[in-house]
Length: 94
Image 1: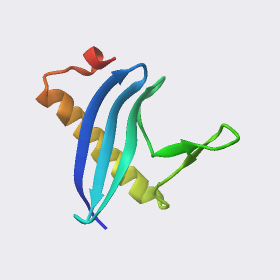
Image 2 (image 1 turned 30 degrees about the vertical axis):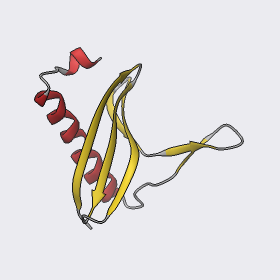
Image 3 (image 1 turned 60 degrees about the vertical axis):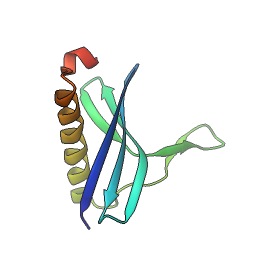
């Protein structure tokens, strides 16, 4: 399974930096992925929903660690590329 497209929609709300959609094999898309600015840097958050108990549960997520690492790498690279394309420095996005 290959990631064939990564779409970035930049956001600058508190810690949220972008919404992301990824497409697998040009036939399956996952929307609602987020790029978040955490205390130790940027990280990728899978789409989730709030349960009736007030906790969050992932809607979609990779099962294997190697796929998670691949997704994180491609998403963060696409995020950085989008910032560069728009002439935004990471410090300006903070």
